[in-house]
Image (cartoon, rainbow, N blue to C red; front, side, top):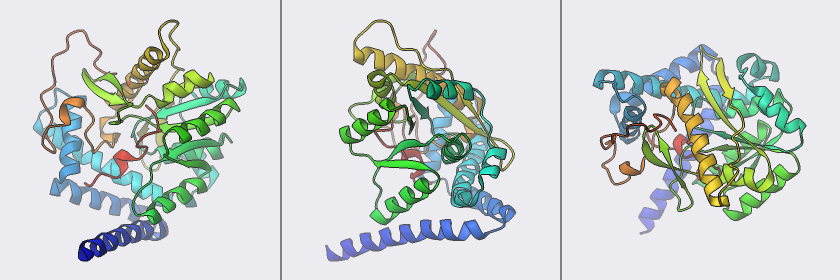
Amino acid sequence: MNRTLVTAEQRDRLTDALYGAGWAGVRRLPEPVAGRLGRSLADAAWQRRGKGVRRLEANLARVVPHADEAELHRLSRFAMRSYLRYWMESFRLPSWTPERIAANFAPEGVDHLRKAMAEGRGAVVALPHLANWDLAGAWLSTVLGIPFTTVAERLKPEALYDRFVAYREGLGMEVLPHTGGAAFGKLARRLRSGGAVCLVADRDLSSSGVPVDFFGERASMPAGPAMLALQTGAALLPVTLWYEAPPRMGGRVHAPVEVPQSGTRKEKAAAMTQAVADAFASGIAAHPHDWHMLQRLWLDDLDAPDGAATAPSAAPGSSPAPSGDATSREDAGRTENA
């Protein structure tokens, strides 16, 4: 038993040391070298075809249902390169100046966000695991001057969690630990004071998740963004991102999700979560290779072998693309083993 405990501790220390080396070492590399390193690591992981890569490919099969095997292989390779680009950028992002952040990210639809903030109602910004949401957050705080709050699930080892918190706080974010109702209450208070909350919200397997139709099949997404908007009157704004030529990133702030006129609070939250899923799906369908979802998402896949997706069910007349919270698993897609 002691040997097992020591091994776990050693593994935790190694994990923390690797991330620490990334933040310290990659930041010092010339940008072209860091880019080549990221692509090399991505290609090596893709060629190994580990659990994360197989799951990524199975997820992409849902997004691009008519793709043949060769096309799925090509997409998954580009997606792994996009995923490693996220990490290379994140390791270097603390050294980016506000001017560089402003020059390399200019999302569409920002007036939706400005309007909500000007009205003092606050905004719940919900994002999927597309491109680099940390860069989008840095842009929000440094370029628009809008501080915001987010939630981080506690990672192991604790030192690694502390690194992520320090990293994101350094980008201008207020980071709350994921502590269920306590986190929700703090987020609600930030919104009632006219602030902004940003939550990565395209996957939730907790008991509080909301079933949504996503690319014609059932998935579960967190109810937190919709519940926060309902409880506080804040605008619920889906945001989608995509990579352009390095180091540029594109993005879109979608129109505010409307609150249904009738129904219970639970029914309204479900309808709003579906609307968020629809916005996510539109962005993922347009840029599937920038979606970093290396974990199970669809309900039919939960009991399937790793890397295998069940055959998509026929759903005539259903939306081909459909519906976030961040009070659950904010960083899920970033930590899956490739």
